Length: 264
Image 1 (cartoon, rainbow, N blue to C red):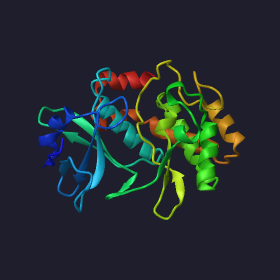
Image 2: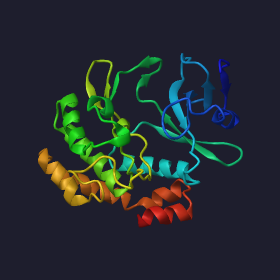
Image 3: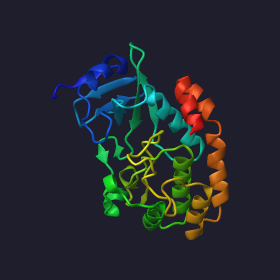
């Protein structure tokens, strides 16, 4: 589609849904320019006018829970409160009452593209048949950031995924980003939501465990890399996810989904 569409999100989201899957992943996605102050979307151009930012709008797949958008938005707010770095997200609502999740691209500064490396590419890991461990990610993060704080970031992400049952934590969802000054760091987390892998196991192992990783495995992982504040990090994550029902209510997650996630 070559025509540039420029309207409010509620006017265009349903039309763009029919153009979906312009980006990779299981769920259809479309790339847009978003002007936050004017609440305005444009689609169909890679060069954005002043004031617009590159965003991705995600649509549910056919086998998702009906309120997966609200669930992922609740996870986003919960992850931020737990200290996990994420790019800005918001919900776009349309007249029919449906909502779609949008997230700001962290690999763009206006029309400039930042260098990005996925853990999948760096570690030569086929994320469809992955054998990656969070220990591999920790080592990779330290080599990029050259600081022990990188270990803590990965531990916090691992703890969040373990305790909130994001089993689709594959190596393509973990990346490293270079800023304009040439410094690398672990990229903001993305695609954090309730999910199962095809095998029902966590794709990324925790100290070699993928079926039911729990605190003992998180602590073993932390001890291997000498993370001194590991228990504090894990408890901070557990404290925030204990408030799941608050995040679910604020994001209009259904009662059935709330109960399902509470019991998992």
